[in-house]
Image 1 (cartoon, rainbow, N blue to C red):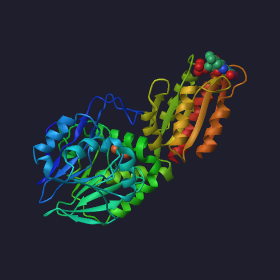
Image 2 (tube, rainbow, N blue to C red; image 1 turned 45 degrees about the horizontal axis):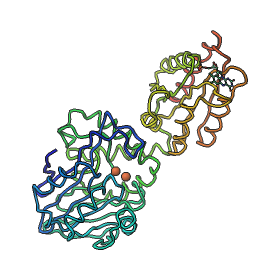
Image 3 (cartoon, helix red, strand yellow; image 1 turned 90 degrees about the vertical axis):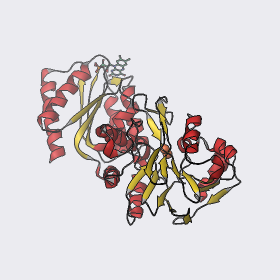
Image 4 (tube, rainbow, N blue to C red; image 1 turned 120 degrees about the vertical axis):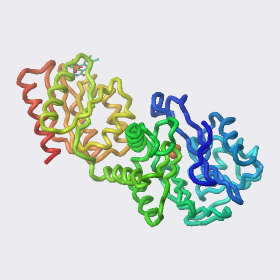
Length: 398
Ligand SMILES: Cc1cc2nc3c(=O)[nH]c(=O)nc-3n(C[C@H](O)[C@H](O)[C@H](O)COP(=O)(O)O)c2cc1C
Ligand SMILES: [Fe+2]
Ligand SMILES: [Fe+2]
């Protein structure tokens, strides 16, 4: 993809990734893709803010070369050491050995550990300023958004915030790189939430701290290192990140994530009745078949919605494994403060319910109802379950 001018003297020179299947080796992006946005600042001194994953390296270097010869690159600014933003560091160091690497104190050790580079690395303090000529950069440390060494870079003249992982999202760029030019806006919002839930939600408190810390800045453009660049309404993505971070304590908004699995359809039939009841209460239900939908997508809904229904039969005295896997991930990701329900079929002595209740205790979820039924259940069970759905929905609204 050709480079794009963001502001005079500031160029997007990223890598648009359509071929990686799993981001972080874990989160599916086969359909969606992702971008590694890197920014070249051309001034009396030239700087590059964040690099890219080691992919399409020729194209990446050619984008840089459109604007400056590599020998005249002065600074390589590493906001974040994760290899999706530093993968090309070693090769860039070979081609532009004069360029000084600027990073936080914690990142300095990592540059050495990950890439064996310790010469020409200069630490920048929180709030430190460097002069490029017309443009001036200020660095703000924002630990744990997403790693302990993470910082953001702010350019004072153009008021561009290079925010790295913060305010980013999945979704390769599809021609348009600015949010106001982008016809697939809803797609990017959805993929920003999924990215947030998968990658940064666990550190919501640190995201809120970072937003607070950056709030005195006048920001004309939010230029993250994944996804769209926000120039018409940069506050939009900041406010979304603030809202999503607050869900860590509030548990989210009115709505239900219904995640279920079923071997022979008994649980599934009752799950449908329950969903009907919830829908009758006027509350939105997002249903996920945990056998087939990757937890990455379920996690996004779980993060956003206050209500959770777990529908799963007993399997070998415990919870049906695909459903257990999602709850395990929710635990690892600190998905807390939910109002929950369990529903499932058993054949002889059960066990799924016990396991869900254990997960709920560990997660701090309020279990309102746990309804186990034998085999296919009765007509009365079904009516009761539909009624439980109405009550559950009403309790979320009320
Ligand atoms: C592989 C397998 C293991 C099972 N293990 C148990 C068990 O340990 N305890 C139990 O009460 N029922 C067990 N069952 C019975 C199921 O819980 C029961 O058939 C239930 O109705 C399945 O619900 P479903 O149609 O939603 O899959 C097992 C069934 C299968 C196929
Ligand atoms: Fe990261
Ligand atoms: Fe990243």
